[in-house]
Image 1 (tube, rainbow, N blue to C red):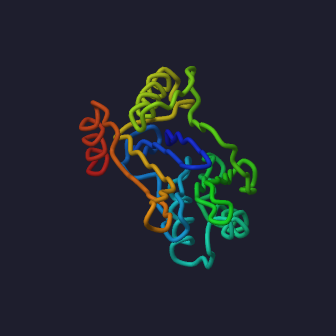
Image 2: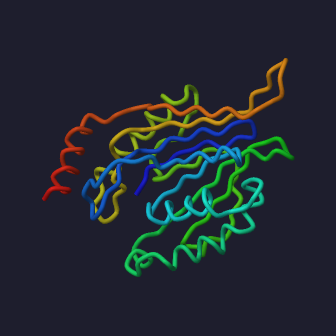
Amino acid sequence: MTALNFMLMEEAVYVVADTMVTEQSDPLFFTTKVFPVPHWNGLICGRGSLGLMIDWLGRVYGHMLARDFIEADQFAPDTLRQLFLDRPIQEQAECTTSIYHLAYHPDEQRFIGFAYRSTDGFVSEPLDYGFHQKPGISIKMKMESFPDDFAAFMQQQRLEQDLLPSDDRCFIGGQIISWMMRRINPTDAPSHIETVIAPAFQWDDYEESYQACCDRLHG
């Protein structure tokens, strides 16, 4: 499961996610879990089935005619339901998946968000403004310096998750990658959306986890 935290605000979106992918509690490989969709002025991210996420991205990037995320929201629930049914039966039974769209609404001139969750049949769920965290932890998030405060928050998430039994645990590791989207209003040019992507943190056991992935690959 992914550690995913984001702050949704009218004027900006701030996101961090870890990079570790696991299978049966073991490190499998590392990847990005937040994906830019520049032609829709937004991001796609999620938790759960990476395969379903990639299937959805394939539709968005390669098959879907829509002006933006608002228009795509009309098609997302039905398409995600079908893609989910196309996944392996065991995955459908055991892996819950949530997909998030975070995007700029050009008509309303503000950022908005939608969630689509397998537990709710992928119905469209408008997101409230504020901080969204997965997994939950015992401390409150204070946003003062991005991405440092988000990275510190996720490090605490890992500390708390590492104390849980493997069946209940979110395996967090690799790196923390940060994403920021905000509207820029220059005085001498049209406004535009700026996206900034940057590494925010790397855990001390990254090399150990990487070697575990290699051993699994060649085992």
